[in-house]
Image (cartoon, rainbow over all chains, first blue to last red; front, side, top):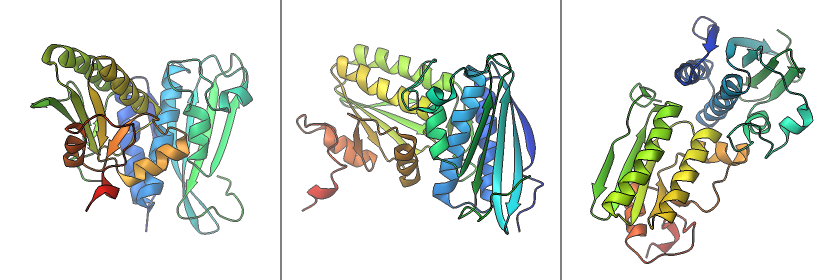
Length: 146
Length: 139
């Protein structure tokens, strides 16, 4: 049975070295919770996109990794937060091809497609929090609240 | 998901010359700066060594996000301008599935299922992109 011990973590995102540590931790956590290879790769890629957003657009921040359950289904929840400039137009930021940095404009919208649940809270001047959850196998009937 | 392949890689990525082709093997988890350094090193190596092809083996890469995808696409584009063709070899199926869902399909990038097929592709006359890893051409 998966335990929360190796999953729960709060990791800083301050440099591209931290991006590597975030990916390593999420890889291990997803494997420990029993994600299949494709789902591991998806959540890992989403984590990489979101961590880079936190670093590049948010000026750095952190990610909280937690193990959630709902209807007997295990999930991996990642909460990225920064106290950067915030996102003025969320709808636009979530659309493909929109970019303010030097990426391909796939970060936020692309990451949303790689996870089951995606929530973003942001306002100009008050930072950004992105919370994503991937469930092992299938999404539970009622989304779990942690 | 072995210990070896998840080891972070800093510094330089080795670039091997095989006749007219440069072989680059990406392994493990790359720092952003390492990928950018590789991009810069490759353009210089192509220009000075006058190779006609570049094979990038990503069979040891577990995650291609939009940053690494962009670096790979730029390497292919700059190589083309320097008269060298690039083939991306050995992408893991899980990575391919994820890239499509991410919306990053790397248009114009030639691909092959492994390094051997990539080298074979480069030794033949130029063909349109996406030749499909030689699979349909087996006798």
